[in-house]
Length: 371
Image (cartoon, rainbow, N blue to C red):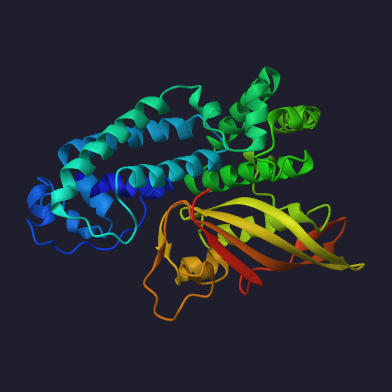
């Protein structure tokens, strides 16, 4: 059962492999006859062909164990884990593609050896790369990450805040720690909006220098706030404070609360929230926003996860919301889902609280493959 345990670890980290169609035997030897551990590890339990290979081949099985350790060690040194999980999900997609494994493809037993050799080489190289501390900066895929890594003072400030946050999170129970890390990731999205770094991932680095002062101030303020908690995570996380304004930051908080209530964190991560329109009255407001999410672990296009965590079912052929009835398709790792929705807010003292408790129904949606 070792292969099953490894796959379970990957799913818990939001790093499960892309979903593939179940593989009936080809005209040659069945898969179970060419993979020595297939029967002992009960690899038939997996519908995913790549997971079957990692489960049933001794060398791939051992390489997967080492990779999982390297992934976990990297996550343990990061507080903002979403970018690391997202980057790893995209690597998995690229690895499978470069090794000749594609979604909805039947895996022929005659192709097992070359695919196995490629997967093993890619996995071993990935494990070695993840042990390099500099990789966290080299792998950054956001404008803020690139700017921070290019400026030593910002990189040091980020590391200091990261260390303070991890010390607080270490005092929490597992479920509360997961929620706190998700909240910390939301801080990063709020920071990027405040510092004019959202939606600038393809902007040349020299054009982002005007945001350095804002980032520096953010790290100073947040580090002081966390240090002032004096080791009490309850003073920082899980307070569900009202938002100062009914805006994209408020929508981001609202989506985080909906995702927490529906246990979405193992399947999806919010990558971007942007305001489209807003209507504000004295005591109420309606904010229309676009929310982008990245798939971290496969799930059916029409399922409780799809409806509860994205607000809709999905049609992968058209890339639009609303799947055909009875569809058996699955959203694979690194799919990006964008929904537009109006969120209702009510004035509460000096702040605003979200009255929207579900992502259903959405105004529109689109599913995109890759970054």
